[in-house]
Every structure is written in C-alpha cells, then in structure tokens.
Length: 209
Image (tube, rainbow, N blue to C red; front, side, top):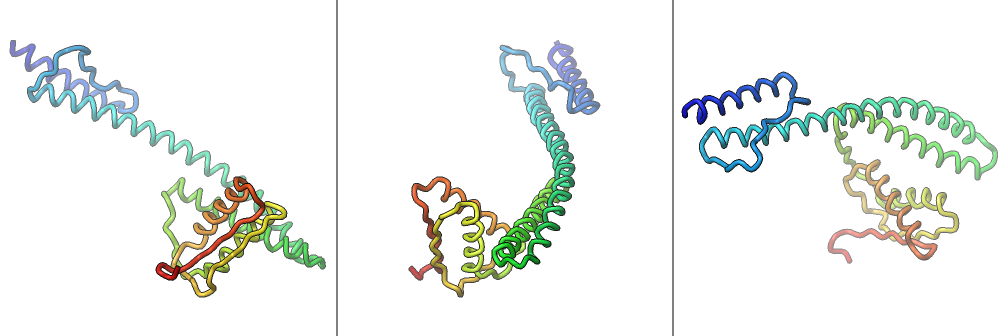
C-alpha cells in the first residue's frame, strides 16, 4: 500500500523532473491519468502543479526560440535595408542641388523620409537585440509637426486638402519620431478611408475649448 500510494507517485515526480531538466524544450510534461479521480493529498497537488509548470515553461521556451529566430531574420533584413536606403539618400542629396525649385523641395522631403526610414530600421534592429528603445521626450512645436506630416500626406494623396488649426505656442513634451509616425499613419488611414478629399487637424490645450 505504501509503495502504491507514496513510493511510486514520488518516483514518477522525480523522474519527470529529471527528464525535464535534461531537455526542457522537448521533454513531455508529467502525464496525469485521464479520467482518474482527483486526489487532494500533497503528492497529487504537487503532480498537478508540476504538470502545469512544465507545460507553461515549455511553451515559453518555444516562444523565446521563435523570437530569437525572428530577431536574427530582422537583423539580416535591416542590414540589407540600410544599404538600399543609403543609395536612396545619396540620390536624394544629388537632387537637392537641382536648379529646379520643385525638385529641390521634393528632394528635401525625400531626404527626410529616407532618414526616418533609416532610423526606424535602426530602432527595429535595436528592439530585436535589446528590447524596445526608451522614449526621447523633448518640447516639440505641435503645429510645425502637424504641418510637416500633412505635407508628407499630400504627396501620397494628390488633391487632398488638409486644414490645420493648431496654435503655434503648443509645444508638449513628447517623442517627436514616435508621434510623427503615429500622425502619419492616422492621416494616411483617414485619407484612404474617408469619403471626401479633405481632412482637418486641430489641437488645443485641455480646458481651452
């Protein structure tokens, strides 16, 4: 009776722990007999907790392995993208010396876009290696930022009219790169989903409207 109630269950527990320690990614969790009545003694509780822990830990290990593989792929893609963007930046710099004012203006916009794309690639690579980058908050003139994003959006949607009503003296503390990316996504989505050819962007201080 002691052998069946105490010795054999403890042996199963220790053998499962040993197998899991040797190969946690592939060792099967402790198998609980299907349809067996649930016991409430300490050994039965320990067996259920061990099986749950092994299942969750193995799933976490698999997720980490997939993330590591993804990080390696991102690093390789980022390297190739940086080379491509370097070529685009070189061409944009040459265009900025054109005698045509329209070409110079377009080249300046292209240089800014390529530089932001390069920064995004760098942040993506850093995220894959070290985790999310810290926010770099600084005072940012909001009207200037919205106007810049509106100009980029107009280039993507010909004929789009964007009204801007943002006071010049609003300069909140924010990460300019992150907010610029968010605003550009919002304006592009609105331009693509909206029924008309116009958008409006307004800003105000809390309590001023």
